[in-house]
Length: 92
Image 1 (cartoon, one colour):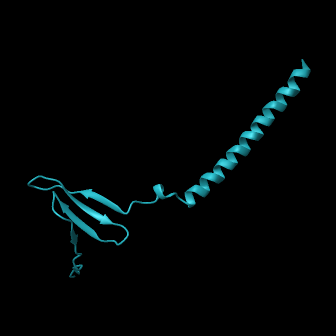
Image 2 (cartoon, one colour; image 1 turned 45 degrees about the horizontal axis):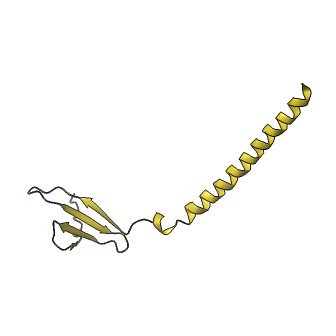
Image 3 (spheres, one colour; image 1 turned 90 degrees about the vertical axis):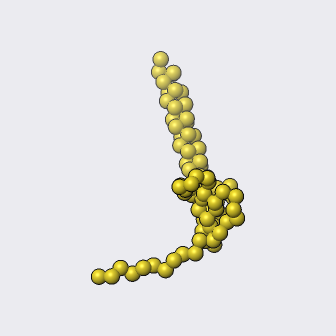
């Protein structure tokens, strides 16, 4: 009976050892990939936010994250750049 226990303990120990080494290597690979994203993981340049309109029809505010500009897209019209207004100071 004793001859079966020691090999079983050795096999379990080796499985735990190998699995922990594999887990450590996978963690290192995941960290490297997280720090160096592939092109399909990089943030998109443009995002669109739908805005409601009273008279219906699609409308969106498109943000260009590379330049920081925003455009208003309404139905089939060409995009028009949204010019930011000057901030209004609150009076005391």
